[in-house]
Structures are given as C-alpha cells and as structure tokens.
Image (cartoon, rainbow, N blue to C red; front, top):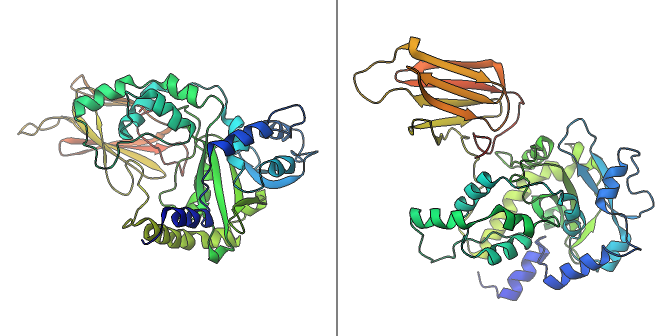
Length: 394
C-alpha cells in the first residue's frame, strides 16, 4: 500500500482507530482514583432511578446509557471534564471510564468459554499470554503461517483453558468498542461507537435488542448481538481523536443525519481500510443459522441435525431414521415443547433434547414430516431476536 508503519498508524488514528499505550492506561487509572475523583459511571447510572440529571455536579462530555431492559429509559450521562482534562484530552476516554461498570463479579460459563476458545484457536498452554491479551482486549490466535493443529491437539489445548484465568484478567472490567460509524471526511470526522462488556456473552448477560437495532440501522446485516447494558459515545478525529457530545435523542431519532448516512459511510470506510492494509476485502460474518445457511448440531443419539433461524422463528430438521427402504411411522413421533426446551422421541428413542438459548412461544410451535426428516418450527417469544447459537450452554 506504500505506507510506512508510522504513516499507517497515523492514517488509522485519523480514521478513528484509537491506539493506546500501557502508559496511557496507567494515567487513566490514576485519574479515576483518589478522594477528589469525579463521579464514576456506576454512580451516575444509580442516580438515573432518582433523577434524569445523572451527572448532577459534573460537567463534561455527554454520552448515552442504553440498558438492555426495554422498560428502562435510554438516558444521557456525562464523561467528567476533570477526567478529560487529566487525560490529555486526546483519545477516546469512554472505554476506560465505563469499564468499572462491567466489573460486576458475574461468573463466566465454562462451556461457552471453551467453545469460543476453540473457535478462536486460543493458545491454551500459554495462559499468562492469554490473560495479558484479555486485559488488552485481544484474543490470542494462531499466527499467520503457523501450521494448524490437529483436532486432537486443539482438544488438548482447549481443555487447558480456564475461565477463572479470564475472570481474573477482566475482574476490573473489560470494555469492547463497536463502531456504529467511523470518522471520515463525509461526516465531519465524527464517529459513533457502542461500548459493551467484552465478556458479556460468557457471563450469560441478556441480549440488548435496542443496541442491535441501532447497529442494523447503521447498515449491519444481520444485526450484531450485544449483551447486557451498553453505552454509546461520539468522537472526533480532528485535530486529534477526542470525545464529543452525543445525547439520548441522537440515537433514538432514526432520522438523525448520522444514522441515515451511516450505512453508506461504513461501506466506504471498509473499502478505504482494505486499501490501507492491503486486504482484498472483509465481510461481516453471519450469525449461526441465518441467511438460509443451516447450522449443524448433534442429537442425543449422536446423529447430526440442522437448524435455521430468522428474527421470528427457529427451525430444526431432525432425521428420524437412516437411509433405506424403511418409512417413518407418524404414530411413533413424540415432540414435547416447553418454554425453553424441545424434546423429540421416535419409537421411544430420544433423538433430540435441547435446552434452547432463549424462550419460545409454545402455542406457536409446530412440526411436519418431510420424508424421513422431522421439521420443527418454533416461534420465538421475542420478535427481532437473533440467537448466537441454538443451545443455552453452547
């Protein structure tokens, strides 16, 4: 691409990518401690139940608290000016400011953790490196050019991983930043980001459907899943990266110019970043079972079945008998629908018994027979919800 490393780093900074050093982080932590410290984000959120003026007594940059509970209001909070002044004011300070909110002491699901670890090819034997990467918000992956491990080696590595190591690394809170739209010349060099718990999925935090809807409005299809309460902030990359105001109305009103322009600007940004990094192009990965591509799962008898989903329904296709001349006897089929569980028996043999990721509407569930396959259709209890997986525990 013709850029030196220094030029590439500056280009990324100009386009809203924050590059933070360990010294920057130590400086931020120091500013957030002491007796004369500004209000914490936790204290602000607690005050929301008393008054809309969450940041009473604090002046600074406005950003937005977006709770997962749709019965709660989306409200404006404040990044204290004393903190902004202490830290530069260059850089995006919100990730450091809100990470204490995500230090909730919740445990991490061991099964989901190991499943995600295997998918990410984590280097299971080097937990110190893994923990260090977790603190930096990065996952350790197999390096380019490194030979892929065999399935047996990967299984051995995965079993060495411990969710307690990740909990220790993220005990003080860990913030992930998701770009709704990045700074560019076409939007006055202003970007808008979601700040979320980096291990929210592993904690079994509830889905934040309003955050997903906001991302979808900004051009992400299918909409990403966000877990638990999140925050939304805005930055400007000129003359240097820094936080600027965004209020609740700016994300609730879908006619706002930044939301309307976001889908097109995200496409342009991806094209520009591909040119700068020399990549041919990247696409957003689909969620499991979406876009008409069936995902595979394993039933109780060890046989594979498939499933699909959209925002309203999830569909399971379960083979009842092996290939051959034998025909399926409908009278031997028993399907049991519970609010978060589906069980299938054929000829008194349990084929599938799955505890679902989220609840279904039992009255909206049906099954039909397609030759030797049982096709089960379950209506989701919450419309617009895309599940990250079929089973509750992964």
